[in-house]
Image (cartoon, rainbow, N blue to C red; front, top):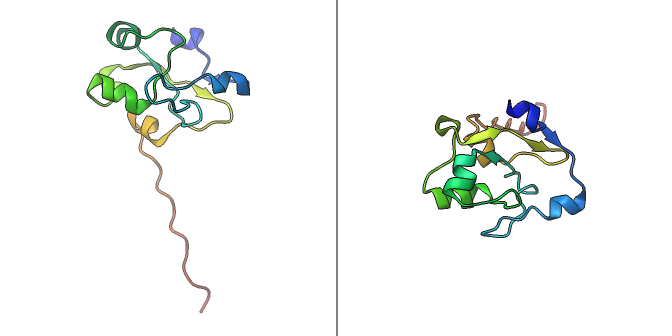
Length: 110
């Protein structure tokens, strides 16, 4: 059902991106990759936030007193914003592991 309501990839103008600042610490949640959609039970009822409010992952977790996660049914959608990547913290909260970077080869040929 949420798939019909919320697109998986948003195309926001720079002006719209600029408006997405965390209410608590002021970081831009899109630029930092912390743009997510939480359950109304958490967003509205528990945190008392509205449609235009924004919080980064760290501030959400600080307010909740716990880490976000799919095991808690915290998320209602997994959106992304075109041109911006998802933060490592949010990838982890979605239940995925960050891919390990390959080590650069040292030295040359012998």
